[in-house]
Image 1: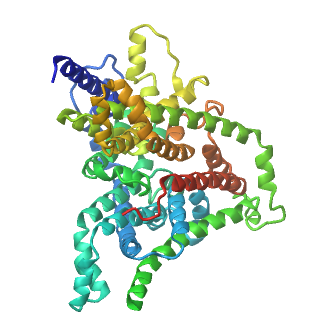
Image 2: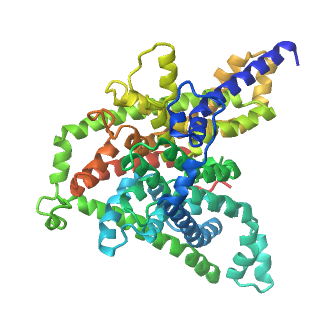
Image 3: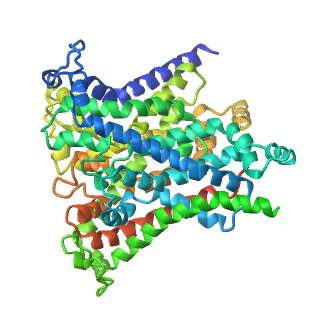
Length: 274
Length: 292
């Protein structure tokens, strides 16, 4: 490698690092803010070494936010489980067998994923009022299926496409039923795909703000909506807002890191492989 | 063979039934509601179909709605353009083999994977002069910069900046994925023929990326129609209604003013737009036809 290309390479890497720091600065600022006292938050220029405090987190832990946080966990877990339970067999079948009307189904599923959330919110809101599902965890779990079920089908199908048919055919010859062939042979082999899909389902439900904003009030309020309420009712408690935001994003960052290979796939509703 | 067929039908049926119940039925209900003048404060309006097209007539007459379409067009145009451009440039920059760069690729993904509400909070902090590091710096160097989100001239720009920050990683990631599939032989052949890096980019890489840029742009375009948390947290559609996009206006009509009938009609139009764009994606990607 000539000196010139090496210098170029170094400059490009330096540029990339600079841009990364710039791009991340807003995010890091919020993270640091969550450990500051109110006085420290309003200080400019900020001190690099300030006395970090966990007060903001402690306050969250003793407030209603704790329940919202567990609501988020419950709803996201339940909807993930249900989507997988219903969607995985469908993904398997669609991989092995050409369903009639395939193209229309494709468009339907992509469109239901791309539709503006308000298109579902209005009818759900009206129906939930009658079914008394407003402000319930069950109501949220159902509406989250609208995006997660299609996600499961289109995430999992390519995984099954990659598994040779001879696997389950051998099992059938040995006398296994079709169900056993799927359950005992195919399902365990698709473990990594299942894990990635489950994580993405969890994240999409966890990140939702709009549905929870409209369909919950107090009982079933999720963490993203609860954080926003720190802005409205209790004045502007920046430390707590930052701490709440950090608590919401930490699980997301950890999980996203695990599934980063599948992010494009998940975000485009399975239209593209990442 | 018949046993197989029956098994597969039983595998697919629950999913289709559930999807029909939770997506198709609500869409139809939305359509039905759009033919009423449903107002939550007047329950008798729920099944009143005496003037089925009144909401659609209002759509043509409502100047605030037309203004929101214009705001939407500006927001969509700038965010899609900037995201595609920045995503492309970053992907080209990050497309080299080195441990450091590969780590950076992951770092750049962070804005996109953050929960949208956290992104909104982050930018609320940055745009609030009292606590904003950005405004702190401006003050320190003697610039008098107004609070962007409360200034009618700057509010939409503020939203565009925040939205671009949130979603440039998406186009970056898609372009990077495409770059990895680029046939190396063509590049090598061009290099042997003495092409400069700039020529390589313009005559080989960019034409190769056309397709993925189009698809990434389309996905961002659809998503830009749905922009909500940023607007809700940063500006609430204001000041005045300079950041009130159509989706947000529809939300206000339904859940602030209780005009669900009118809002349903607007939403039907939005839904139609996103279905049309999805159809375009299916056409472009040729997706649904089995690839493997």
